[in-house]
Image (cartoon, rainbow, N blue to C red; front, side, top):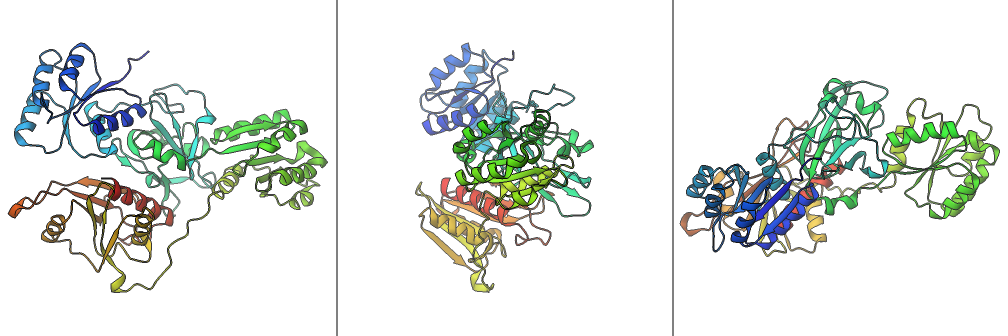
Length: 527
């Protein structure tokens, strides 16, 4: 049995300690936190830790003194320095004492996760399917949660193994594949990976949870057909160290299927197929079992109804089911030339399918049934673009009392449509004071510096071709600017989006725009 991974967090700010505990406990670490560096040092000398997260500026004992005394007895334990204002002397002293890296406060969950991964030299984690390096654990369908077509399953070490169940892959070979890189930050609803079939546009595989990529299924490069043949097993895409699990998991859901089939052999085959597609399956084999299950069926359950095994009483039983659960989706699984097709269609069923497991049509059926549960996103009202409706910046005072400004490169934000309208709408729904400045902002360094000097936090939004998938978001904290003529220093956060094929954002689909708006608004409102 492997040794537990243990982190020691030393910081006189309770909020930092609690944030690190929340983030890394979810990732499978045992986390100990100390506000008093003297107590932490005594503990670090006597215990073994996978790594130590150490604040530089603390009362009683600063981080450099802590590190000097630690190195006398523990020369090799990895240490990550956390600091509000990095200085050259402190950085030089920390490096001399063997600190692995440093991170500047305030940091996001993704940034601290990346830093710890670098400190610990990211290891490969076990996927939920067979690979050349690891045996295949048994599938656990109750562990699969879906965000749109993407799924995740939590692993024993706290990481989330991620994949996708896509319709239509069985009919045409995958000709191109874009996989993420280890250490890459990914955000819920935005691209994780992508594939192409023939000469069609990229099909985006969205990330079900935000986090940092810890492992990638490299065998997909040689065997991309695994995405179609075994999507919830060997066709996994990546493992992600999740960073915002508690706030994001509520947007994911199980694919719950009620399989009604009285034939033991056929029913077992159908059940196995459904489990292999990430479904949580309850198998009903008799009329009595169906009667017992009916009151507990909700509108998010999809019922797969085997017509051949239920015979002529099948349409009548579907009628009873629909009277008890009128919103449930019933998919009739039929054989060719069945005599009950007309009777079934009269019951208002969701779909009538002829032998859908034989040609894997069941993938398309499940996709339609489960995705239809969510109402389609309603785009903002369209207005004719005029110069006056372009947005140069959006400014708020967030709940921390900080004045935050989002400065946008020309052509990215519009008042009444697209990403600009979504950001405005979401900020107003949060009851935050919003000031929208019309026009087009200058991206000259002097103008950015001027904007930074007038707020507590400046975020600059640009598009940049970084050889990623359209809609991919990258975040970079630039060096602090200001400090001239008595102005306080201000940190700039640069947000860059991979543009569409025309170099802008207008070609991105509504779901991608919604996800971008969610993450930008969270950044503005939180930090």
